[in-house]
Image (cartoon, rainbow, N blue to C red; front, side):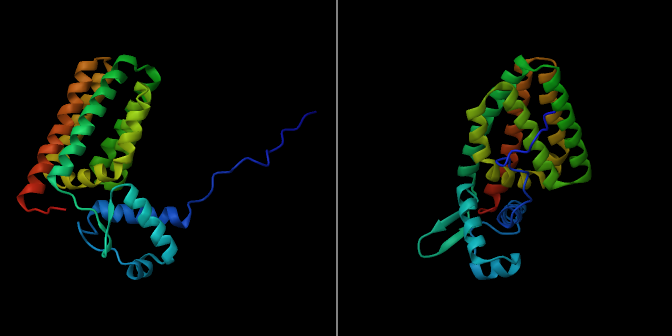
Length: 230
């Protein structure tokens, strides 16, 4: 009788590492506005606040720099990356192009399984909006779009969106702080879902564009009325 043996090369799911935990805490702090735009990140206080070594802090800062959340200035060191409307407008334009195209493709090809996954993500979104769970809202929103990009097979486009995700989340946190966006955001996502479920590419694409353009207008107002806003 053959017995199934565990491969010595098999990697079990490891617990979250200290570096991963630190990166998650720092990323959340930046997105939530705990650290302000242009604020210096000094190693020693960060080590004390986070309870980690300098090597972990330095590695975390390198990751955050790659995500566009931190920038390194000559003779000054790391600071929280500045966010202004010029930069934000480019991010929204990229999102509008990539996400609307993915939504149209998803609507053309969405099968029963894809629709069920999107429905589950939409239900989770509704709960997150209702409960005001900002962190969960960001995660579920990302999951919702990941399903759309995966179904549309726009893999390279999704890689680009992921590289922008830190800055997208930073803008999302800012726009969601306004009452109008908090109330309309879920309704816009429902329209995207409806277009895909009805296999209507134009409706799905247009709903996505409206969703992003509305967020862009709110961000423009916030970023230009009291510059720098972030």
